[in-house]
Length: 499
Ligand code: KIV
Ligand code: ZN
Image 1 (cartoon, rainbow, N blue to C red):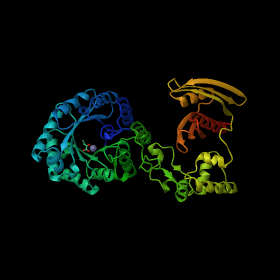
Image 2: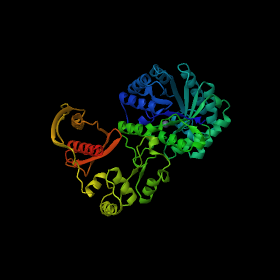
Image 3: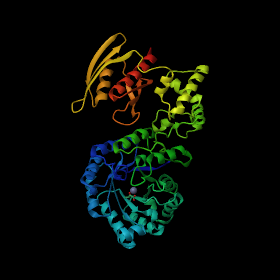
Image 4: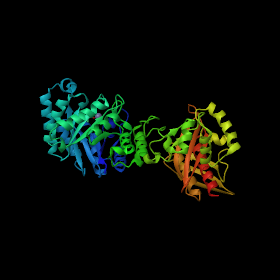
């Protein structure tokens, strides 16, 4: 059986320290629940003494989440510890995370102190925290730049004082992977009571080494990793949860695993990115938009023959439906044929050759050829189907968004009025009630074609009816109308599959 690696998620503490990423308590509870579903072992919910908002969030998360341990950060200061204990009072399983700087830089320049006094303060803080909770984690801040012999002395003293977890942060992201691994090994080999505590890694990404350093720490004996969703965090960020989890899943031979349900990684990543207004870079490992996208002809052909030719992770394992083949001027016939088939417009032989010629001409002019472009290439226009919108009227602004839509379905006309949380929701809800089939929206993308408020909005929707899936497209200067028409286009494609 694989050795268990504990996942300590600090998205709501170190991640939330990023300027512009602050969440309110309700949003933090939403994230905490998603982290619980994901299967993290510990949620660092905040730094209660830092503000009444943080205190309240730790308190509310402690009530809302029951499975993971809820952890609160403190400095090695009595009042911080008392406030943290108070904020955690409702938590089913609680931990206080206290600590102090241990590098020469922190000891002399930040704390204006000396090594012996720092050991005393560390021990005192851990002992004090143990009065309130059984589970106390000690962080040796800036351990990455600390002298290993001194670090071992501090770690041994805090374990003797009752620390259950010893956290070895590379606070400034300074270490090289072998150096950080050696630091952990030094502690394993030289701290006499190390078997009484779990060693934790906490790496920052200033040199782009956070994941490598974390893995190196684990390979040398750490069994807790401190991570954030999408790697968000101070400056260049923290170690990304998804990278560590999938690295060990991909390398089963290492025999280390976590309790994470990896199929929830993509949805959790998107939720955090949306709530925190932090877009994920397109080429970000595991969760970037392009992490499973193939654009060159050779790669597309290889992936279509066997996904594993160019992918080490099955996209389904991280909660994505499938890898995406991006159609560009470098795409080959295999990729075009595959996409046409997905759109229900299969072409073979000469018919495929003819479309491919036209496709290449278009691809030379555009960066990416989208599904709606292909439909135009095939001489089809959207919404030629059984269902047509004859009339759309929307009321929105400061009023409750309300839509009235008249649909022609075959030979009959139907009108319905519905409210919604916005004009698009109101209009689509009105349409849904008039359809015999339950057709839901799986994906909804609105893009501006150029820039400016008179721009055309291009809408792409993926809709589903049971097992049947279809794409709908439309473009209009009125984005509500474009959304309605894209939905109807998808509905018509589904109805064609049913007929
Ligand atoms: O990076 C760091 O050292 C920290 C500690 C407070 C754990 O975030
Ligand atoms: Zn940190």
